[in-house]
Image 1 (cartoon, rainbow, N blue to C red):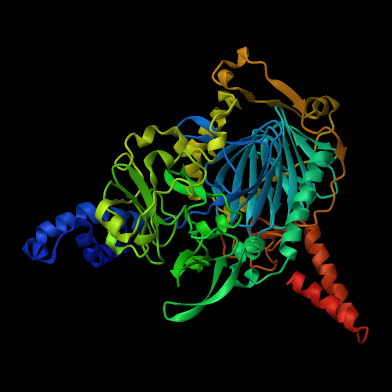
Image 2: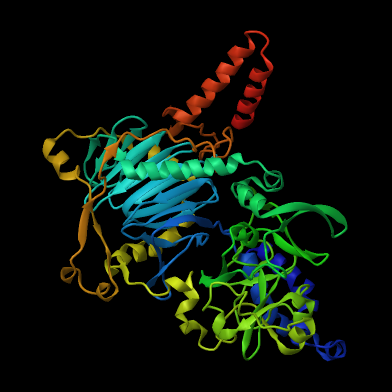
Length: 639
């Protein structure tokens, strides 16, 4: 442990003496009788592990993505169970998560660094790296569309046949078949890198695509699947319409959460509330039932070993994973998150699985919503105020919880067997009842619910989808487990600057024109690995898999209207530095310390043309009121 970590642990060690005395039920007179040595031993054994666990955490708060849409079924692999479960809209998507879409499934993922991902049918992806400056996703098979709407993040999309690198402002389709993969640029330029042969191939929007089997690369026709393209355009139009509705929420939310302004405006309003000595703007839901309170309309599901809240309400994701709920004048209000600085990283809003404290009795289990500043215990470090649990026991004393009188209590058997707790809550619960009859627990474990670790439904996202008639064949798990094994080492050394530096060392190749090679890699076909449940563990030779083409009807891709709309972040942010301290400009690579122009994206060119057009227009003399208003709108959209 570093000196800084030791100091931090020591400071928390002594400052939390009062907390420990309450947790252990030690009275003041009893404390006087304890020797200094005995007290130190108690503190070291009971309290210090959780405190020091946070101080040793060097990765900072975890970045977590979100599944924003599902059509059909999207299955998630559960490592603890070595099995698949159906996931749902508004479920989290984090590191090492592996998902597989059904033969008719489609899904949309929104990552906190500005990267958006959409997947088609029979598609398997796994999140390997998620940083502010880099997203790495492995695509084992299927159809994926990537949008890099970030200011500075790179996308690295790995496949069995090489990887694709996309810079900010770029968008591309990736079709991964059984024997080859095709890359089609929709905006900007992307690179396909073949590591085995040490070559990279530039793929530009409006030009030919690149198809490769990992050894050779040929040019393709650049056509996208028509039905796939139309679905993506509809999703973009939907998000564009949402962000065009400007209500009060957009002015009260941090930039990272403004895509959720539409849901907040539609389901509630902002009020000026006097709280903690001053007036604040807080959000209040309006379309809820009488007596409503947070963390009741939805369910708990185990994810990353912690219980994560899966909301049933359209406003539930942003309000239950970010910020805090406060109870003022007999009303629940939501306070947006405040950005915190993490190391050398700028301000960031932190995501939490569900900030509650757990309570239990012999028959029931419950949770108390945490007030701002109250400690959140978990198996993983999620952000400020989050403490990693190393051993059983501990937690905040019930009497010290500000909202103990608002505890949600349900029978043990209901915790993982319903999708909403509004109909199963234990009645006639008040603060006195909670303090006298319930015990606290930092996390849910076997000490809270007997045989907890054997409850399979704890990993279920929707109880109605608990039983699956078909699942991916066990063969797909081989790649998932291999990625999971090598990913931790990769995450310790990888960065956007390192990825760009490695790319600059790889020579630019030219697609081959050999007819035999073209015939070998040109036809992209994929085998669906979804099989009946009773065939999942059968040898591959005993299963009749269904094969189909990846693109049924080709068409020229349409311009992406939402690339600089929903979820897009403004351009003009300083690029990451190279190893020599020199900044890498947008649209440039680095080779031996020199800059290499790779061309601006279509979006960037459009922005420059718009700015140039406005400059010329201003030189032409006075404008009408309508013209001035139009240009003000354009200015506000570009800045």
